[in-house]
Amino acid sequence: MKILSKPEELLLLSICNLGDNAYGVEILNFLTKKTGNEWSIGSIYVPLDRLARMGLVDTYQGEPTAKRGGRSKRFYRITNKGLSAIRQSREISEDMWSGISELAAEK
Image (cartoon, rainbow, N blue to C red; front, side, top):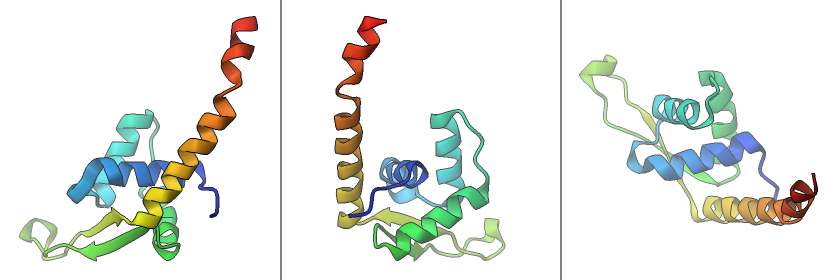
């Protein structure tokens, strides 16, 4: 499996955390809050589309709402393949960090 980029990993984790409320603006707000960095809407839609093409997320349209001028929201949900990808990403990160604690204690 392809190693996830950091933005891809953060997007998948955001979708997991948001559950049934995982749509563009909520994902953007969640990422901004959790990372402390401003994310542009464009910086999330390009990797979200890539994650969908890779089969790591599914998308579906919500119901149109009057609040949105009759437009519907595009929601995201993680697939089993996506869950495997973030597990693998976590394992890789933990393995890479495993030798760091000894190095940090030496300084």
